[in-house]
Every structure is written in structure tokens, then in C-alpha cells.
Image (cartoon, rainbow, N blue to C red):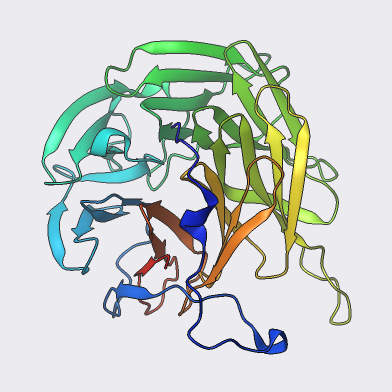
Length: 359
């Protein structure tokens, strides 16, 4: 989704009331607006998080729970009908709508799944429809990794016959009408995860012991891929696009021994049309990075939920940084206006959602 680039002044930290020696100067801390209560039991891993000026909404397999963005007060809850469970969540909240893919995971012979859009302001169902399963990639009981939703589109990878390459297919999220499809250039790949829908971005793994994961970016008129370099075990769980620049994190291997240091955690940027690597940014604050696009910049949050860095999409230059009080496990982020929401994926007791003001 296109966003005009804001002036850099929106990220500037307020001047401290007392100047400190440079030796002791730390990155500014973002003020905490609210935190959710400690969860006393496992309520299910979060599947997604939407944040708008009207609502912060957390999605789990059995419900969407919405909170007032300024206070955290509960606002509304939506549950999928019947025995359905939610298995995929839109990356964005286009036009104030949150889209979910859900199905009855106990009905293995079902020919359809369902796609529902929720008005995030009220929780009302804006529209819902059935979607033939045979037009999508594999939809399992608990997940649909071969499907992504975003930008008003559903992107999926469907496996062909034994001698045919997989096909990337794009559908209109509202109507289900096919927009286009394109086969991958070969039949490589035993495992697919669609990380984004607009454009379709796929993480592809092969069972070969020496093969490396690939990241494919597919368009109607072509595709390109990059291979995961040595020293890294996976691409990050999310990508972000600003203009024609795509950013993705690289997660380093675990150190082989106590005295060895792993590779740096890296955010790499590529040209969407060509696949050319444009820049990279290295960091030692955690092993995973979650990039998102906001106000025409990249925001990169670490997996601990303790730090966010704003980067210029043109060259990867650091524009601003904030420390975030608290801690999350496998943190994911969502931003709106000058606010930032962080969700924790820990199974144990945790404050699931924390919300901050940038300054």
C-alpha cells in the first residue's frame, strides 16, 4: 500500500531537559501508552495484529479481539461461525477492513474455505464469501502458509502435477476473481511459505541436504530470487515494501561453540522490479528482525520487542531509534500515526500486547 514519505522531523526525539555526557547517552525511550493484562493460560498463538486510529485488533485461531488504541479498553470481539478456525490474516487493514481466512478444520472433505472482512471500527462483518479450496495452496488445520492476504489480494502457491512447476496465483480478495497466475521457473521446492501478497513473496525450501532456502518475488511479467547466504538459517518471518524497495531480515545460524560468534543479524533491501541488492543494515540487537512500512520509511523491530529503528528506504540510513520498555518473544509490530503496537508470541504468561507513542 503506497504511503507518501513524511518529513524526517516526525521521527525526531524531543530534546532532553538536561544534557548528558555523550559517553552515557542512550537512544530515547518510547513512552508506554498501555499494556494488556498478563495472560494466565495459553489462549493460542497470535496470528496477526492490526492497528489503526480506531482499533488495535489481535487475531487468534478462535477470535478477533479489539481494543481502544489510546487506552487498551476492550471494544469488541468477533468469532468465526460454527466450528471454523482462523488460519490466515491480512498483512494490512486496507480501507479500515481486516480480512481473515477461516474454515472448519475438522471437515477434511470440505470443498470451500471462507474469507471474511471485518470493519475494524465496529467489529461488524463488512462482507464474507466462500472460496474454493482447489484455487489455493494447502490449507491445513492450523495454518495456511501457502496463502497470504494483503493489498486487497490473495496470493497463493499451488503445487502442480509431479512433472509441473508450482504456480503462483493472485485472486481478488473481495470477489475471488483471478488476477493472474505464473508458474515458477522450475519445480524446485518441497516447502513453501507465502510471506506477502503485494507483490507475492515466497520463501522456498528444498529437502536437499546442501540446498539453501530461496526468496522469490513474483510479478505477472516475471520473477527473481535470492538464495540465503552461508551463515544464516532462514529469511525473516515478514517482508516490507516501500515504493520499489523490498526489505527482508536474515536470521543467523546459532554459534557452533561457546567461543564462536554468529553472523550479524541483517536487514537487506532489494529492488522489486530487478532483484538488485540495494543496501543492507546490520544490527546486534537480537537474532530476528520484523520490518514494516510506515510513513514512507522502513521500521525494523527486533525479535525481543525492545528496540525499533527507522531506516531511509533509499540507502538504509538510520533516521531514528527508540528503546521499548518491556520484552516480547518473537515480537511482531504494527504502526499507525505516531503509535506502535508490539505483540508477543510466547506461550507462557505474558503481556500479549504493548502499545507505545513514538515521542
